[in-house]
Length: 87
Image (cartoon, rainbow, N blue to C red):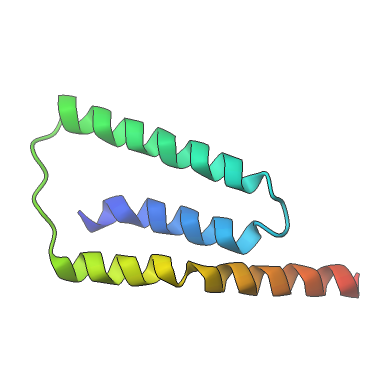
């Protein structure tokens, strides 16, 4: 169950990190998340069984990671601004 969330967390953190470099990444990330949702929904309805409910521990950890994704945005913004100033 946790592997399903890895893609969403990875996409969110990479988007927050690289958004100041290329703003179109937000649109591509949203399209990617929607496509992932549709593929997972298709697999769930036609190939898989009902998923086992995950624990509240997993929910709390993923919620904290997503709430701290603004740090990835700040670090990315500082990194790309510094690289632009140095170049």
